[in-house]
Length: 287
Image (spheres, rainbow, N blue to C red):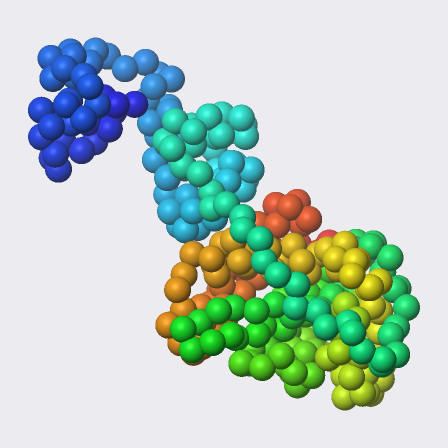
């Protein structure tokens, strides 16, 4: 790999400088250049180029499973183990996770709804089960809160809203977007935690007016809303923790772009057989 790097970068750096940096001799490098490459080496070089293009296109968000799926869609016949080994050789590693805090305010006396999901996040069709939650983003202007609604059938984010305050309007706006986007379906289970915003009269009335079935997690049990927690985890790892937002408007634009232009339409999801939410829904309609 040292010689391969030197070959690829010989027009940028001098052979002598790279030889010193890698602890090899210039004569050894030139001897390597004269050796005929095996078919396997040539195949690896071509595969490496494709892997690097996919890795860069997805801004270092894809590991070997999703890159393997991309390659197979391009007609490449390779297994995940080989892709993982090539990525290790190329020193390509997907962005890593960080922890984040819980935003739920469940210390209130308002009525709560039963848990209709009971941690069953599978859905047989669109608009059968939605989940909703709130997370936060830091900007140089202060906090920006994000409320989202996910359709569990495809893991598509069908509604979202952002505001500098964590209010009941925030979650109502996200739900209204989902309703408009999905044509105001009836009898959808809409699951959330038991935070004060979700127990508010305004939100509960919105559910009632649109014939939606309210479901809530148990107290302090994050696993009851694991699908939504997983999305926030992905959002934080792949977008939020990699960027400094100077203004709330900048954060709003970046989050909009991530959800609508990347996550919903392009990003492969393991729950969809490594298809994007949009691809999954299109394939379901074609059946």
